[in-house]
Length: 345
Image 1 (cartoon, rainbow, N blue to C red):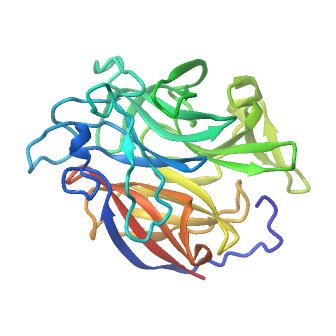
Image 2 (cartoon, rainbow, N blue to C red):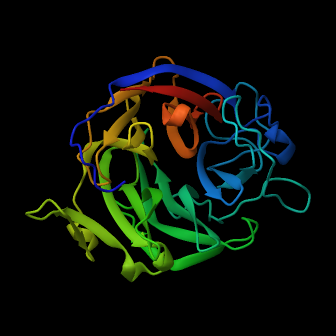
């Protein structure tokens, strides 16, 4: 996964894009209104044993049927569902949601809900490590113009009881003006003794580029153990620095809500993200730090207005990875949908 023998790009494009199903909302097969979830977004995924967790952002209860975007009753900054459905071809059946005593999906990470203080706390992605769930989230200070927002910082919450209760790891934070506010993690087994977690990271908003950090799984809670990709040495080996300020940008673009996985069909890394104004795009990577190929269109903004947050999961593939499935949010009707696409090489 880390050292590609061939230094050539082989992804030619995407075909057979299909909207398979709706994941959330009263109109979805999952009928998430039964959990007080009429509108929500995001839907990044965490594989943990036999479960996959779907992590959502700002979540709302009852709302007018013609309402566009976030809003409605019973606002929660974040919620989580879980599934044991291993067949992505007909959509994903959610087994349930982490709920309160009356059965409504509950907020996992609290927020002040005060503008210019802490408007909300949005999980950008999560992972399963050392038998625990970890949610990496950003504390949003203020929503600005479209695609722009200010963050107080990013941090991590931990659950050891399948997502029912969460502890804030306040010692593990990145500053709000850093490039490490929104993350996409992936675990890579180095040898029998060590597994590393790579994080592809962007600033707050949708207009920054991608930087890279890593940490060993056993040290995931220790901020001093995180290392930042700082370029290549004379032998083209990666340089890992203890200093965040030395991190190099590996993809220069306007990147929003990114997702990175290893694809066995291409034997390459795949990166998807919202390219503001241009829809959802996909790139192929030779190694975690690159080189990364040119962006190719995955989903057209003209075909799916208000699209964002395309999240992949290497569990949800078919035909050896030639076909892959992903979640994606639509601002209208402010819910999460399930898509399929085919890789052409």
